[in-house]
Length: 191
Image 1 (cartoon, rainbow, N blue to C red):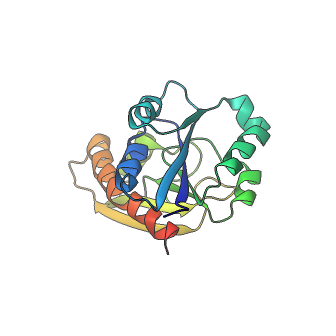
Image 2 (image 1 turned 120 degrees about the vertical axis):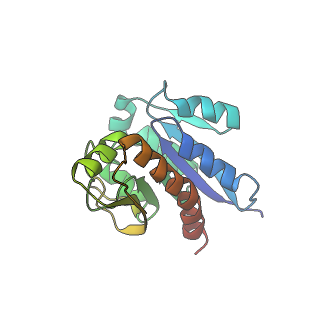
Image 3 (image 1 turned 90 degrees about the horizontal axis):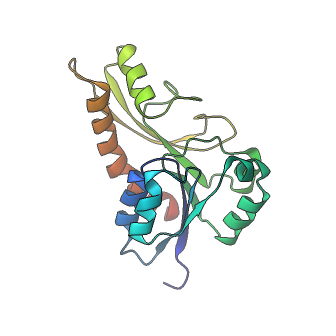
C-alpha cells in the first residue's frame, strides 16, 4: 500500500502498550508507527523504542508548554490517529483543536468513575478496591480539553474477586488493554 495510515503514540512509562501496539501492526503494510513522543527520558519506553526500531521524540516540560515546535513535528508526521499509551500529561487545547476526534486515550477503569487528574496506574486500582467495586475494566475514549472526559469509544469489564489486590487487578486490566487497545485502534483507522 502506497500510503499507510500513520499512528503517533505518546507514552510516559514502561511502554508496554507501545510495544503491544507495535507487535499488533508490525506486519500490516497499511499501518505505520510514525513516531513515539515521550516526556520522560528515563522511562522504559525509551529502551523499548530503541529495541523495536521505533522513532522516538523526547521532550521536556518547557517544550510542551511552548507547544509550537512539538505541534510542527506532529504535523510533519501527518498522524491519522494519535494514541495516548500511558501518557500522563494533559493534552493542550491547541492540539485537541488541531486533531479533533483523532486523539484517543486508554484509562484503566470504567469511566466516568475513577478518572481525572492523578488517577493513573495503581492509584486507580487502589481507589476501585477501596470503593468496594465488584467490576472494573478499561475505557478507551477520545481526548478533549478535560482529563478523562472525552466521548467513550469502548469499555470492557472484569469481575473483582474478594481476594483482589491492586496488583492482581492491574494484571486483569493489562490483559484487557493488550487485547482491545490495538483492535480498537484498527477499527478507528479502518472504520
